Image 1: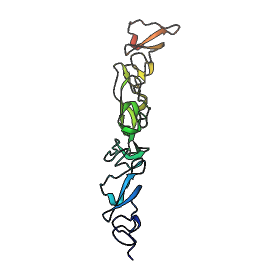
Image 2: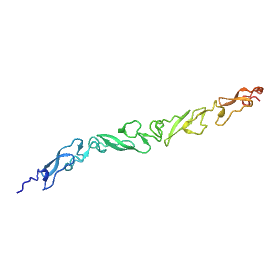
Image 3: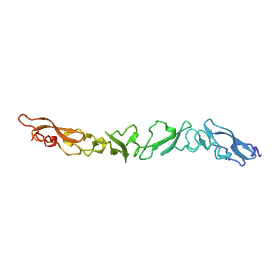
Image 4: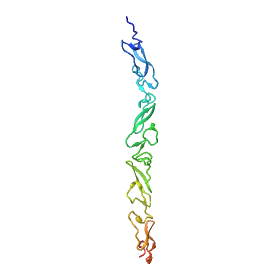
Length: 211
């Protein structure tokens, strides 16, 4: 005879041979329609379709991380979900996770951040200058008064004190060379320390030395 109740039989739900097998859930058959009783631990029915069961792994789905509808949106990174906690896969080019908090993604633009220029923790500190970072390379915007960038290397800033440096006195490349004397530079003006033996500064002009 007709031994199967198609209204309730999980192996023949609604028709012979139609087995209920909802994903990640305990199967049921009611009124000939497949469904489930409860989701397996860590899974959920996020599309509301009982026939396909608990289709979402809440521990690994970036669109439903920890609960249905909880989408991971880390800054400047590919979203990821691990053990139901949002994180990221990889940072987008030019960004870094400098606070070590995977939940907020890659929060720093390492192309322009002075404190993380080119890489997390790489701080721009050019000598005697206002620091800047452009395309991940340290530089400066302006030298501090009395200093100059005489080697042309923007990464090390304004390395020369032109107020006191004999080779760059008052400006880069301006060398103090007083006649017959030890050169000196004070307040950016050339002078001399002491006359050579047998010479004297008779015009009292320190700039031309011991003439």
